Length: 508
Image 1 (cartoon, rainbow, N blue to C red):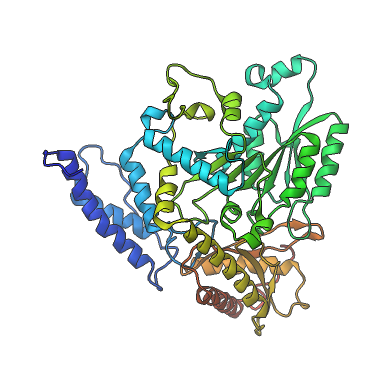
Image 2 (image 1 turned 90 degrees about the horizontal axis):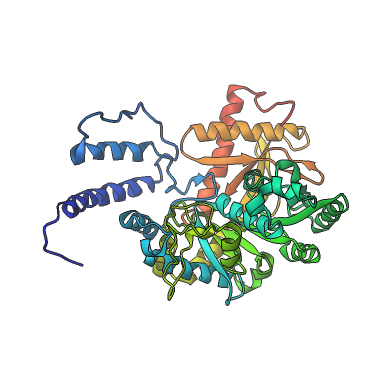
């Protein structure tokens, strides 16, 4: 690809990339320093847009370094906040490549290599999910919420075929109208409810299914609720199961849920936005825990546990893209001309959007670079670390200020726990939640660690707010986690010295 033809644009790009390479690598190097802050102190920034001439290369690097210095540091092993972490280095290269090409993956000719890679990666992921090799396929979407929404829209239009043209008004005018109803775990991601709003289903027709004590959907309760809905004149059509719930990391019993769906002709979608890679890359002995092969559709976000840069989400379809085209396609002839008949059709018409980034390139490039075994090892290591961390919490000795309690044994790579102020029987339960929020706020304000908290309801009642640490980065070690526990104890000490009654509260 080397050329001697003068090209001003190429020269400018070369100069910028040369400088960017140094600035970016310096940023990662400094971010990985053990003393680097996770949350920087944001000084007053000059965000003014020039009205006349811009700053050019001479001045823009100060701005870029300012942005890097003010950004949350996901490259630190002490970033234990949300369900993603730093990308892999090859992921950064893939992100840059997608930007360089600036292809649009809606029409085949606008991104032929992107379309071929998306088709290949989608089928490869579907194969790992044990979907039928002769039919299954996948498409990328800008995040798991959009993948989930498209699954719901396809299921809705398949069940209520008149909606695509007549809408709900037309269906109701036909005289055979029954309320569409969907079912999802009480611990499911809120994107399912958002999708129900977008699809015109309405929140009142989203049935929240109770969980068991481990936070997994109760399949018996699901059956009862579905049959009650049918008896009351409703029209259940969609069940969302979760592979790795946002808070507890629980895996719903998908085989049991699939039986209920089969008995009543319901579409089974599995939201594996976070935990999905465990279903795809787990060892044979753990595969039974994570299997998703009976689903009609399956969402997985490689930008979480797999280290692909944000955003990269796949919706895998058991029966391929034909149901999506039928449910959502309009065949806009001014845009879609049939793709390349001997290779692939245009895929944009199978979605609710138009412009599409070829994000599959990022995953494909990383997968080619690392190989499948890398992801198997990475996920197995994260799973082992979660179990080891749970043991660390359970075995950690109490201090004069309090003791440690595990919420539950981790089902995936998320560990949830309390630091209980005082002695465990001397503090009423509500103060546990108050202590968690107070400790988390102070700890994060110091900038050296970034952790999060959450709360859920279980059959026995609501749990007090607890620490929730998702383990997504391969840089996290047992030493990292031990230092976080020590930091929580030190923060409790400092808060108690300021106010001996700081952890006393009336409610969580």
